[in-house]
Length: 122
Image (cartoon, rainbow, N blue to C red):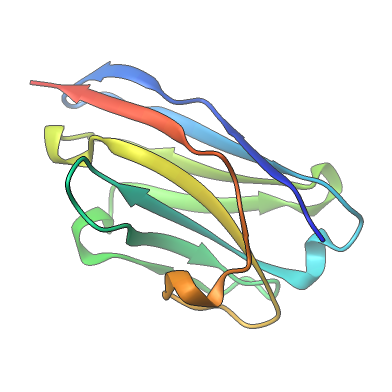
């Protein structure tokens, strides 16, 4: 019973930055754990980052130190700040919501956005 809409994707040079946003409908945003996942062509969807309702954060090893997940409960929005982007970061990025505790499993998230394309050129 929640809708998510991602924005902020685009084409960026290697070493550049992008900030993705995910707007969440409903008034229960503060009860959700929010995650970011990505899927490259020909590959399975993979975990990127998660932030719980209590502030717990966890990142995929390949993005640690480069990506930051944050949330603004007043705006019902979650963000993914991406810096030092690499060509291997190229993928469709998805925002996802899970009621309660955080997870790194795609199957544990019940609500998903439509995805936003991030392309990093060499």
